[in-house]
Length: 211
Ligand SMILES: C[S@@+](CC[C@H](N)C(=O)[O-])C[C@H]1O[C@@H](n2cnc3c(N)ncnc32)[C@H](O)[C@@H]1O
Image (cartoon, rainbow, N blue to C red):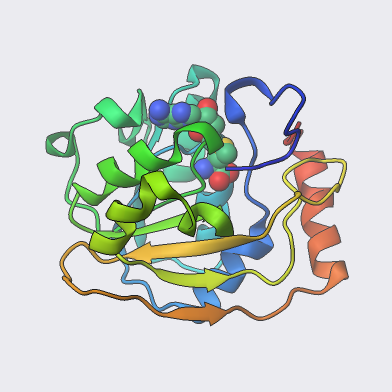
């Protein structure tokens, strides 16, 4: 998800890789269980790579619309049979081992159906979303029934190799589909230094990512 380029053309397929520092801040603050994880809109695997850099207890399944991502995802996941070139909203939970965690930065225009479909897989659902995902008449009923915990990134991410920051604030939203409750918690994550954010940009440029 990225609000980059609002008012002009968004990049093809809404391909905005997640900066690794956003993944680091999440994993420092939230104790997520190991085991089977699912990346439902995986792109070339920026989140998978960021998680794998600090954890070795995860077996990934990746889903992505764009077939050119099969190769890079296969390398990161370690087995191309666990890479599915498909529309996640039509991807059946019966096809995968029940994931402990479903994690992604979903495409901006289709975030809601992806969140709803992810909740059907049974594991924790962790999504990088615009903070104002919370304030919407159309999503209000859903959010009242399924209140997430919200981990706010105090620095705006850049989703492009140019380093231009996004026009809006982001947070990791965490849902536990097994838990019925009426309200969630909010936490502001640690700030990220300019140097750390800049280093991730260099990696992104070398990998040819971003718009
Ligand atoms: C914002 S990018 C994020 C990529 C990756 N999750 C990351 O964080 O780096 C969104 C990705 O979702 C893919 N995508 C869009 N709609 C999809 C769908 N319905 N099913 C699977 N992938 C989808 C796009 O091709 C793009 O690679």
